[in-house]
Image (tube, rainbow, N blue to C red):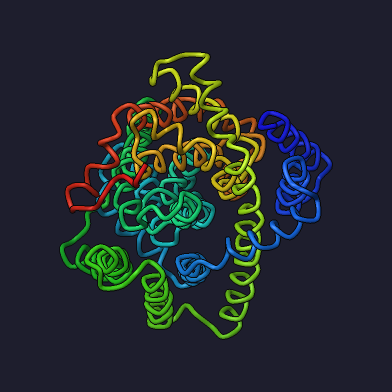
Length: 438
């Protein structure tokens, strides 16, 4: 029965996606059809409705719409340009200074806004034209921008990690946030090293403009309120001053006040921000709800155990099993968006990852990291398309220059997979439990 249900679910889901049915509807239909192979159809419909309601009746879920709203406010609030100036102050003297500024700014703005797409769009729009005037290749700047934009999905606050927390059965959001720092920074720094090599090769020099102490202090002073948002939100969650949900509300209020103080917010823009945030929230919440049906079916027919037995039949080596999981997730990430992929594959692979010695926190970082790579790879990588669009170039022109970045990014993934203390070091250092009861 397990094999029949699993194959039915996969076949129906893939068929519906090929036909162009929205991912939310595809997940719901494939789950109900597959579940009907184990239960009476009417009972499966009732169970599906109950699981959908239960899946979205989680307090932590409220954090997602508020972080989306905070990110959209930041996109309009003049925060990006101030973070870019601060990043340029830090790395502006390195060869290929604009590329390093782009990478640093993506790491900071992506972390604050929680959106890799927003980071790629904002920084590509601001830095790209300036770099081109200084003689930088359009494609070179596009590749750096695309390769580093997803770091904000790992560096907290991160909606993807909150989603994983929900579907994994309540893994600590604070522990996941802390675990994302080192892998996210390693991703960004690795890309900066690649950019440094190609900048030296192309003869791109660092900025020759001297920055006075007064100008440097002004740049720091302008960027400090934006950077404090990370300290306030993450620090408050870590010390227990508020929950992740309350932290998201703090982020909204803080970013709104900051945008008003920067005089970059209008009532017309605010209305559009609310409308866009509501639409995005509706999609994500509905997706989480219908994915709860799939998670229940997967658990009910014990698909994780069947997949685990299959992988053990291929090899008894934990190294090989984790490698197979990584390859599969990398492949899936090229076709599925991050959120639905997390919702679908966490219930399947988390038990197997735990059997291989990874804690839910460590496996969560590996899972999210894998799927983040999919955002910058064809055929459906959303950050790839946004980065190409804002740089006014083509995918064909940037894919080859992106290959060295892919190698470094996957190399960091392997480190996180086989040396999981990279991600669990900070949570464990601060006393957070890195495992759930097995």
